[in-house]
Length: 168
Image (cartoon, rainbow, N blue to C red):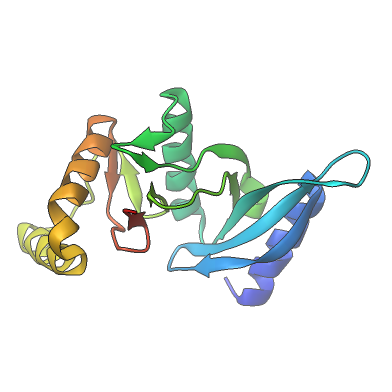
């Protein structure tokens, strides 16, 4: 999906929900996230939300599934890390609206899988663990605990990086 197509999806979703789009919070391999603000019935700006517009339906569908699982389990924190909560989503816009969280947090579930690990070879998993241990350095044991906690809920997070899991 091109930047223009993402912006069109964002505008369509914002109009549908009555949101004012402030700025882009970030972009990754699965999509772009924007800071938005709800406009109430008297045209006053309400609380801020994050809206992620996905590049493809598969990643969108996986991430919605994770957020619905977290919602069903009433999860707002994992081992002291804040987790965004689902506010709304729209299949036709590939949009997920969520709360905005500040560190410490765990976010971005576009690369997550429900009820099964990604189908990687043992060699790929070994390389992945080695790379992530280097990325997180002394925090790697804490990250492994966070990932294990998510796995106990049937959520397998593959997109693990210091931008998605932040401690203090």
